[in-house]
Length: 231
Ligand SMILES: [Mg+2]
Image 1 (cartoon, helix red, strand yellow):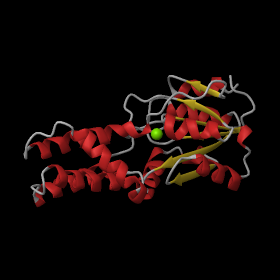
Image 2 (tube, rainbow, N blue to C red):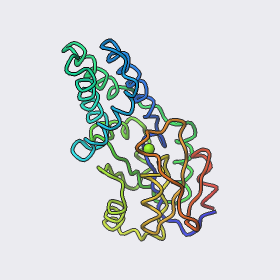
Image 3 (cartoon, rainbow, N blue to C red):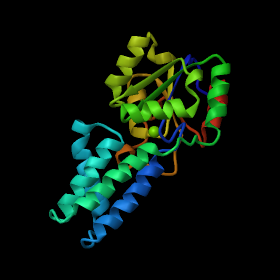
């Protein structure tokens, strides 16, 4: 049980709604397109390296991922990738943005229970602004949230800034999400509580070590376990 919480922060992608699956599928398709030019044994690592190199300029989300796929394809084919194939990669990105929002099982019920219990809910998500706004609207969950924030990075400075602007003290804040790197560690660092709810697919970039001992931290199997943890 984690006590003293007034404001509950919830992550969007792979916490409230499914997201990583669309990246996973696009990456499979990407491998097939690139493979026409010859086998690249470490293609996943090459793409990840390009994505990470570009994060500081493009930020998180589908648009940056699409550009990184194109850049990687040019690199690993030594410029052999054809215009029609580049078009196919752009279409992959467009398809990802157009994919309908599917909520994670039990997420809607958990959000409603938390709101009904009197917690102020803060939706805190990162990625392309348009894509995230579309997902928030399509999720149907927005009316249950006190505040919705789309941020470009989830680091201690971002959490401090958002909480400071909303007048929330760290001791009364709990964040719950699927990423140790984005939803747990920076939140513990600013003195708030964090709950990890793992998702079956995790982008390598979001994997991080366990929280320090003694932190106000818990891991739950599903979002539906969160309300009970707070009472
Ligand atoms: Mg997430």
